[in-house]
Image (cartoon, rainbow, N blue to C red; front, side):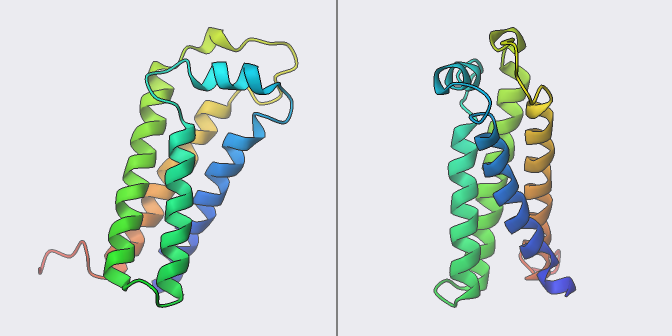
Length: 137
């Protein structure tokens, strides 16, 4: 189970990241949410695309279509990229852009940052269990 914990954390965090990004579209119009996401230096929807890549890499690795080391490298790279994108958006995004009444998820940017950290932890754990991050190499 310990060997699979990084995979489970990475998969769950990727699905959660996509869900948190999509949840913003439920109570608001697409135009408002797109303006909110575009208010920073980078759009966090790019992190959602990388999270999809993490899911594809984990599934391909588990089905034997991709070697474990290649899959772990892809997952680690995409996880780091998603974290960097979300962090850059959280730091540079303007909070006052989206003060519409009825916004049901005011802490969305912080939840998104937490989920991206969890994705990075899962990717690192997955790579470490496969020996990608060992000091003996």
